[in-house]
Image (cartoon, rainbow, N blue to C red; front, side):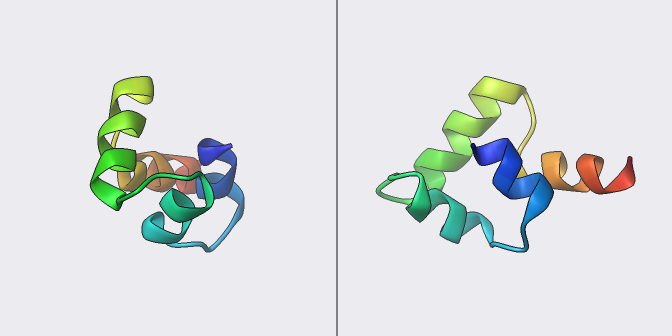
Length: 50
């Protein structure tokens, strides 16, 4: 769901973090980076390039 939000919406990372139930943005940031190897911003930028 996080990847979909990053690819297909203009929601900010803090908004996505909140929607996914994370207590704070840094927890989401670390979790996302653990899942994908990329930061949310890097993932969004790479999705926009394709």
